[in-house]
Length: 130
Image 1 (cartoon, rainbow, N blue to C red):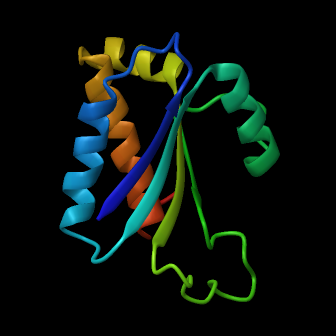
Image 2: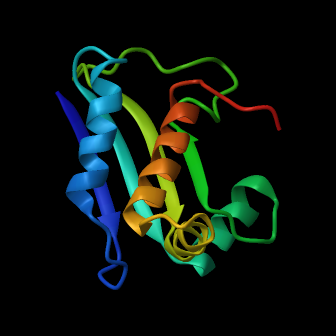
């Protein structure tokens, strides 16, 4: 079973079901057992704060991902007693998604899905060259 914990502010109209279905489809072919991932859609002010705090970058960005085990120097946690694989959190900037969608002539929900799946790849250990 795959659980997607989805949070967005009410003034950011996002097709939750479409995003959750896309994540579930991708994870269904890559993980086994109970798995959990969090998705938050935020504004540029909050994204800028996160980017500054965790990446020391004073600007906004379109997507950030925070893996559960990324910040640990001694390796990953032991398997959780409840048996749920918690991948981490993906944060999307709604204003950046809107701008990207307009630039690429896409629907905003489709751009958000693209960004979420990009963040999900990071949580799964698939990275792009910096």
